[in-house]
Image 1 (cartoon, helix red, strand yellow):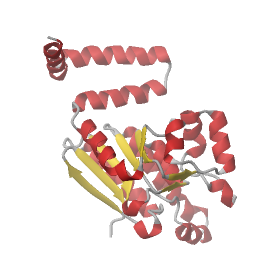
Image 2 (tube, one colour):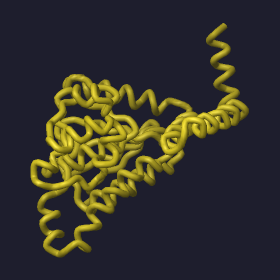
Image 3 (cartoon, one colour):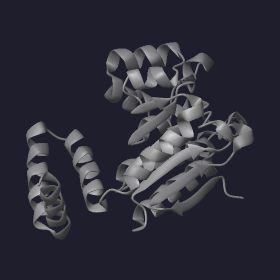
Image 4 (spheres, helix red, strand yellow):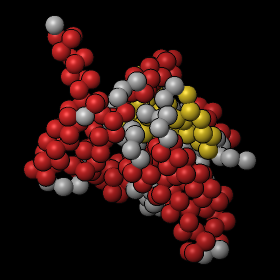
Length: 254
């Protein structure tokens, strides 16, 4: 039985973590299936945006304790694939050509918080419960928190969150820049669906190029990034999609 459900509808690819009884806790199999799902959806010409969410009202509670204990008993070589597969899943977000949106409600702890950090855009319910709580169990993060979190919120906030294990609400996450939008729980599904549908209706060539430029720019200097953007905009406007967009813009102006 698959632990990541995949579907496509109206330009939107869905990868739903499907272990609701375990609050969608991460196993080696879930990590493998999620990486494969993101890769396959991103390669589909029918998909303009990918949504990751959890089944049963929770995003993801982190690593599956039962599996961690079983693998730990078999030694480091048995344990390593659990973390490698999850790292591949998070990495698949950055290499995916289309934006990946995380819809976060309920619990997003430890690995769930780390998956949230890897997403391109995060939409949260106000009452979501979010934390990197590894420290509370005398553990260290293994899904990217020590590396992604400082890049997202800065060294001070990252160390404070990682060393305290403090819990954030969805509103806190938005305030810190860890989420783009936060809505009350009763409005979350409708507002998130409207946002994602808007992205799905955008020109795919523009969407993929914008994501690529941001990704490349963050790994280099500002001047290098501006050079990439200049080349990209000239190439885009010179092409069919760019000409159509300019014509539409001119018509609206008139």
